[in-house]
Figure 1 (cartoon, rainbow, N blue to C red):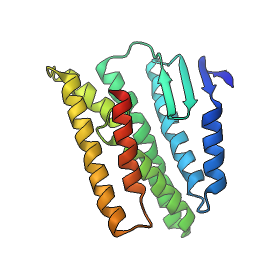
Figure 2 (figure 1 turned 90 degrees about the vertical axis):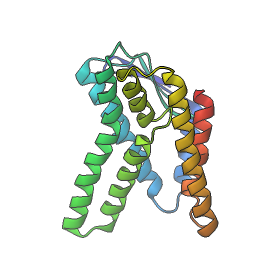
Figure 3 (figure 1 turned 120 degrees about the vertical axis):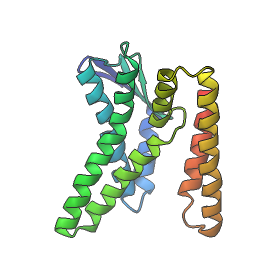
Figure 4 (figure 1 turned 30 degrees about the horizontal axis):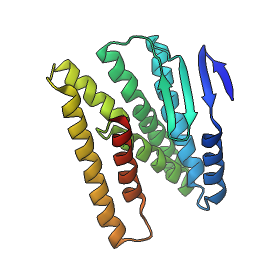
Length: 196
């Protein structure tokens, strides 16, 4: 399916839709809805920053691997940094609002949704290629005029992914019922391979 909003072409592919539908059907905790909301807030943060900086992308694709933003206008290092940080910042802002509202109303569900926003923002700050933290690191290395920037970026990215994987493995061994950190580590390593 293709459509356009604010002059941006959106493409939604069948594998993406099927995957989301499957995850929503099998989720018995309700956290998948919270996760999808966190991703929507995150991506909206990027798009709002792009619109404010007049660096709109040509296309946003929703495919099996996630969200892909392609063909944005030329942006400076500082604009790229603002755009990269705006997604996690949106998650952190919504986290603060939901958590405060959850405390005021003594609502556990709001606080749970808030924590999902926090996790989405924090995960994307990891210095891994393909995540916002990787983009921020790339911008920083460019500003500092580091030679062999791509090599440094790949080494830091792989090291961070491996550290998360090892930590996730240790947590999964001790707590078999919660393999989420291990799955995140596997996802980040695969993301590194794809982005190489």
